[in-house]
Length: 210
Length: 210
Image (cartoon, rainbow over all chains, first blue to last red):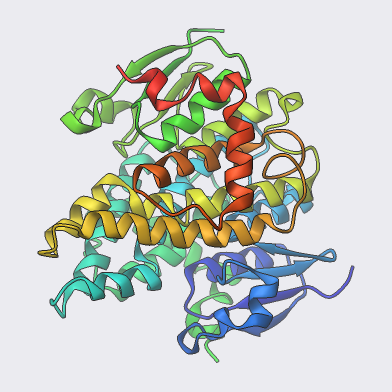
C-alpha cells in the first residue's frame, strides 16, 4: 500500500470523524494541515485534490477520496471486522440514519461559510452564536429521540459505529457553543463512553491542534 | 412482503429521491402524503414513526426507515443488480461523495425550517430567495467541478446511481429559485438524460402533487 495522507484541519468536525476512523482501523498515515482560517482550502493545489474546497480529503490506494462519511464507508468496507458498519442491511440502515441526522441535519447548517453568510444579512452581533445554539440544540434533541429506540453502550449496539464518529465531534461543537446538554442523556452517556477509548482520544482537536 | 408505505410530500427533495428509487426498483407501494405546510410532520402520530419530523419515511420489511439516503442504500442492497450503487468499493465511494455534495452540502442549508429561521433574523424581504440562490449556485458550481472528473451519460458511468437521485431534485429546486444554470453544463446534461427515463418522470413533483 502506498502512503496514506489525510488532509485535515484540527477543528473541522468532518476531519475529526475521519481521524477517529483511521485510529480505530490502525491505518498508518501522514497528516497535512489545511488551515481553513487562512483560506488554504481555496488554493489551486488543494482545489485540484478536492474541487469542493472542503476538508478532509484522504489519499489512499492511489485515489483521493473526499466527503467524510463516504471516506468512512470506504474504510469500513476495507476492514468489515472493525464494526464501523453493522454486518446486516437493517443495522447499516439504522447507523446511516443516525449518522445523517447529524452529518446532514446539523453539521452543514452550522458550517463556517454558512455562519459567515448569516452575519452578512443581519446587524445582530450575537446572531452567529444564536444560530449555532438553535440548530445544534434542535438537531441533538431530535437525535436523542431517535437514540431512545436503541439500547446499547453506543449509538447502535455495543461497539462504536459510524454514528458515534459523527456524534462525538458534534457534541464537542455543542459544548463549544454553550448548548444546554441537560436533557440529552443518551447522547452525553455515549459521548462519555467514546471519550474513554484511545482512538477517540487521539483524534480530539486539542490533541491534534498544531 | 408486507405492504410498503411511503410517507411523502410532493415538493420535498428528499421524498423525490426515494420516489425515483422505488420506481426504478419497481417496488409496489402505497403513498401517504404528509403536508409539511400544514405541520403534519410535527403531529404525534407522525413523530412516533419519525422522531425527526422529516419526510420521507418508508415502512418496508416490517420496519420504519428514515433518512432518504439511508433508505436508498437499503433499497440498493435489496436489489444490487439495479445499479443504484456501483459493485466496487471505489465506485461506491465516488457515488456517495457526489450524492453527499448535494444531500449534505446544499440541501440541508436550503431546507424550509432553515430558510424560515433566516427570515427571523433579517428585515430583508428578499433574503429567502437570495439565500436559496446563493447556496444552491455555490454548491452546484462545486458539484460541476467534481463531475468534470468523470465521463459517462450519468453522474457516475452509464446508468443512474444514487448520485443522480440527488442531482435531479436539486436541479428542480435550482430552477424553482431561478439559479443561473449556464455554466453547469454537465449537470444540465445529466438532468436531461434522467428526465427521459420513466422512473424519474413518474416521481416528478408535478406528477405526484395532490
